[in-house]
Each structure stands twice: as structure tokens, then as C-alpha cells.
Image (tube, rainbow, N blue to C red):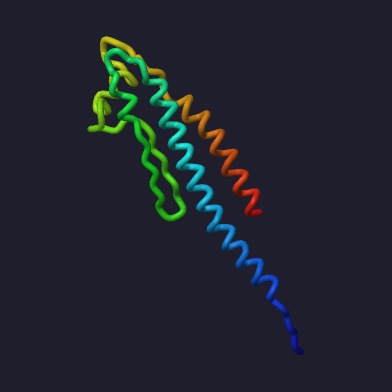
Length: 127
């Protein structure tokens, strides 16, 4: 008994899925980078206007790293940049004074919702 199968369509579908996977990774990287910029700007805006820490907004940066299939985004004051080394004071407070800047967690949560929606739309395109 002999069975002949034409796998051309299956191979074409596999190739399209591989290409879509590569494209979705590029789009995801762009979305995450954009979230880093947006979060950096929002944190700098909240830190603007401090009489004692005027250099904190300029010290806020973001770092985006990719390892294999993992994207990592870190946003906040950078030690050694402007007053970044002192940023713990207005964000965490001291033993005699509380924080003078709002906790940036609410900004991260709001941006996570936006990023989640963007990544979801990328996945819809792939599927």
C-alpha cells in the first residue's frame, strides 16, 4: 500500500508562521521600547519641580535588554547620572522625612495595560 501526500501547503503555512514569528518579535521589541520611553517621560514629569532635587528628572533613563525570548525593561534614575545617585531620598524618604515624589508604581501599571493591549494586537496579527 502506498500513500502519497502533498505537503506543499503545510510547508508554506509553516514558512508563513516562522516569518510572522520573526515579525512579531520585531513589533514586540518596538512596543516595549516605546513603553520605556513613555514611562521615562512620565517619571521625569512627576519628578519635575523639586526645589531640592532639580537634577532627578534628567537622571531618569531606561534600559532595554533582550536575552533569547525574554525582554526586560528597566526604567528609573541612573546612578552616576545627574542626581540619580540621590534619587532614593525623594522616592523612599529618610528616617526623618517621608518621600517627596510619588511612587512610580502607578505609572508602571498604567503603561503595562497599554503595552499589554499592544502585544495582544501583535499576537492577533500572527494568529
